[in-house]
Length: 234
Length: 206
View 1: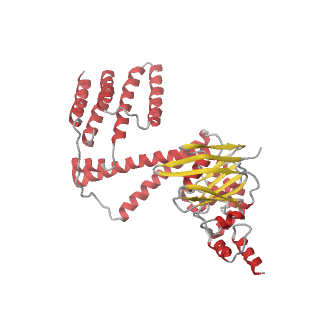
View 2: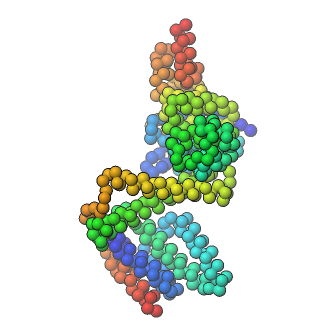
View 3: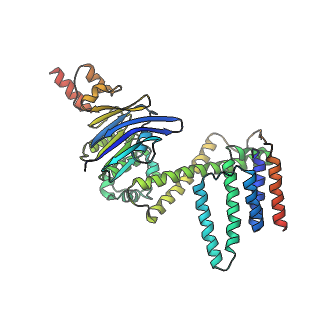
């Protein structure tokens, strides 16, 4: 059964803040962009079923497993040690800690780790499992450039399910299937990539530069922008 | 009730009355029904505390004690505590401490009470996040997963308290502080507090 999430006339409310959202998210990687405070985290909570819409409904079809990676990893850690934390996610600690750049630190105390280390650990645990719906809220926060690139690589390896990437990151993005933008209190579908790129109101600098040279990137990574620029020059 | 001093006085008096005898508990419950808006703020926490009291009452009964009396008295204490917790406002303990015991010991006592109440709010939020974190891991919430998570929560609170202490020291806090406490009083505050004290006297003398 194909997986999809349908937002039917949804209004989300947190305090005085409101966000409207409609659309269908099918299999693939969806990038949801918008400035800080535009409502990405509110939408992430709603997609993961944590926040109920004020009006409308969110229908999940074919979704058997789902999770959400929160922007601040410390609140998501429940294990007494890094090894226990990996085990709590149901993944083997050794390989996952290695993937997170924390090899041999199974017995380390999570409260003595930095934000970046915890972020890498939570993301490695999340990405080590298959999910029908994976919602990543600001996954690039607290990561240095090297780990941002690594995260984009890992995301690019996901072959099934719906991945929703909500971020204001504008340097190290993965290849995605669809782009959504939060504008003026509403979620707007820009469509599938590459057509969506030209409709993006605030694309990353390198994409903007490529578009200004009338290059047509196939996707949204820096490499795509570079390749498009080369093709245009050629 | 607007004056925190009278709220505290009423809370202490009614808790003592309720704990002293079943009649005191009935009168304290009647006071709660008449003198408060009868809102059960934070009903989930209240329900959890009530279940704990219920289990204890059952154990008391099974061991030959008066379980129903214990249940009645503690339920009244919980009602009064729930009302007092629901009406509190930030800064009240600092005001009361300074008003009662002055700028040094009173201020410090008030500050400690404020920090403790602040920690309760943070703990409440952290507990909600902990439940969410366990749920997001996709498995069942088992005792095996819950124990280290709660341990982590307690250690996080201790770390936060230490950081707060360090922050106060870094900002130059040494001892006491100056504060001009101000209290507002509603029309029915004094009669309500007086009746609460009356209930306590009756319950303790009966």
